[in-house]
Length: 271
Image (cartoon, rainbow, N blue to C red; front, side):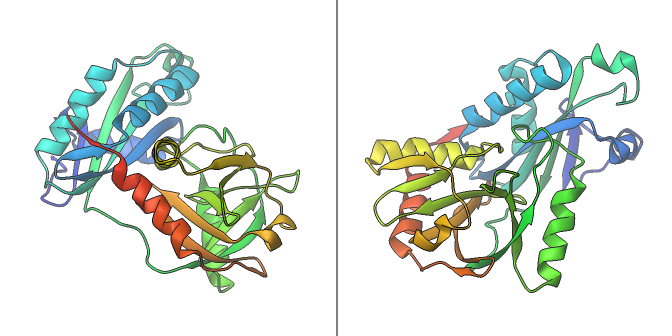
């Protein structure tokens, strides 16, 4: 049975996936992925997505598939779906995660699509959690902790959770990168974390636009002097943050506008 509908499709190595092929993946925790938004059948930051898949594949499997092959699989999914959609590329081993042979297996590519998303609306209140993601620099599957802390934060009246490492530094949120504003300069937190593709897009376009930016260790004590904060991921270049734990953060419309302007300046790639 094929799993392909107007709103959702799943393909493995460019061919429609069957239920039989997908069932084992539901129980596999050794894979990595990247998520992107497709608009008018184009993708922003495609080079960053490909670079993420290449580096993670080398770390996980000791080898990486050619960019042109990955692009062909993405193109197939984009061209057989609607003009606007969410798309996720997952690299996994067909041999499974519990065998020595999986270390020598050629990685396979699962491409899944879903309706497009622009992320939540409005400013967010973030609960702080002492947590450090395993293999933090890789976007990998099987991270139950992120969802657990998100649900815990919502139950306590927050919108999401932000992680604080053992050195007291804010690193990232559950599915977001953090970014701050001191009134003049965009500040990226300095800690072990995943460098998001949206983060990469915004950084290079802020540089092109001449907006000052720097990296800094951000602690809860430092928050009191912050003039603005936001979160970003593949959905959006910036959603304002109005509070972290008990610290209120001023609304900084200009800051968020610059984040969005930076993303808008990024050219979209055809596949």
